[in-house]
Image 1: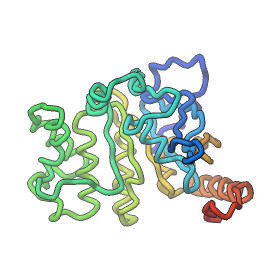
Image 2: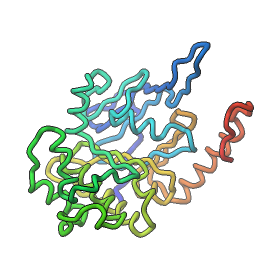
Image 3: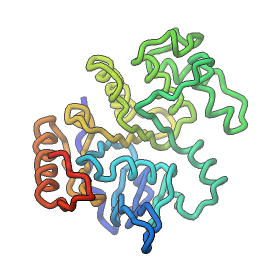
Image 4: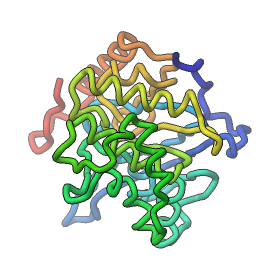
Length: 281
């Protein structure tokens, strides 16, 4: 059963230690501008917090900045301005080396594409973050991570011997093996059938609802599916790179209605210049 929804986390008096991830005036602009170039503003001064022990879905029309927000929040992309904090550390101040170390220690990332190495077994794929960090793989931690996603008996199998849902669960185990403070997921059910997607969402839900001894798990997930978003404690909506609204205790119907409103608004306000692509209305 889903926990009660968290309160919106925009209170300036809020203790930052309560947040697994905190974004302050986060802006991301692509392109150089000037007479010979053009720029695209993917994020516009976004203020957003993801409390520890929460499950948040991020939604918005195509081109609203969802994936950019996730990448900047996870330290995979650098913001043009503003700040991003992970587990209390301002990652915008870190060198590339220290940022990489923090990502390996404090974050896990699950992509729509499983990104497993086909020549490695499930256990070896899960152990990969430890090897990349220069650590000897902890076999006990690998076994525990695979068991956590229901694959205790599949450690020796290679990706080609697993179903799509099993491969995605291996990817989740790989993201969890270092016991990160926050798990980022970009369309994690996008390549799965309905039944397998529900099983994966149940696993993500249990990570938040049944934290281990290391503390509260936090999940931040980008999705376009209202049924998927309904597994979260709250949904945050982006439009044109800015925070548009939030929805606590989401239901599929309420999420779908909000998305319809945002898409309709985008269609009414989008520029109709010939050189710009028309929005999907």
